[in-house]
Image (cartoon, rainbow, N blue to C red):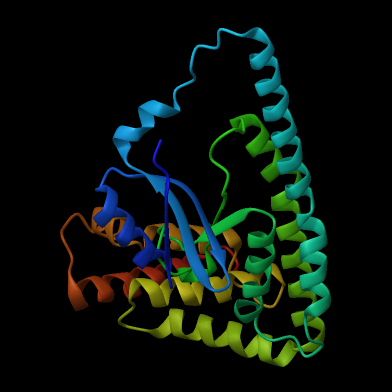
Amino acid sequence: MNVRKFSASNSREACRLVREALGPDAVILSNRTINGMVEILALASEDMSSLSEPVVENPVVSQVALAALAAKRQAESEQAANLADALHTVRSAMPDNNQPVTKEISKVLQGLAQVGLTFRGLYGEGTEATGDFYQVSNQTTLGKSEEDIISDFRHVVIPKIIDYEHHARKTLLNDRTVALDDKVCRALGVLRTARLMASEETLFLLSHLRMGVNLGRVKEVDIPTVNELFLLTQPAHLQKLQGRKLEGDLRRSARADFIRQKLAQSPGN
């Protein structure tokens, strides 16, 4: 098995290097950030055959291998559990004059990297977190069962991220109420009145509106309406609703019209 390491300043560039060296079907084994650089371990698709489990003739060797694998899984589980401490450090570092959550999330992401997790933008590798959507995944792809990975995320990772989010919202609400209301009301105002809306701007504004609804700062719009807008304003869904292909300003105009209609029909109105 010929595992190779690739480093670049961002994920997109690192993936480009992988494809150039190993081909479009290369298998990425891990992806992590070290000292500001993205590091990827990958191997060519034809080398995957060497990963198949060999026939072990010596039962003693087999028992040793199983014991080593069990110890590795235990260490990885303990590493995931340390996420609580990492996020606690992140929380303690948050300034009293809390900045918008989008500027604080980088500290959470750094905490994730410290415990063997990685993150991506809304559309996967090399994309931005449009609308404050992130993909969080484990960096370890070999030697750990799917059940263990799911359990770590369900019982350790996700609850701690949610806990940090709640803390950040509470700080915003208590310490920067006017700034919070300004951000939320501006988002709602644009969504209600704009005549041209691009996809990224829509997700950005809906993210602010959703936070305002969750924090009780907006009463006339409900969460199901916001969630529906997140989905149905995407290009393919919008064109499906319109029954025709839409491009450029025509699509942006249709999106703005649809948003205004849905907000006006929200049960909160």
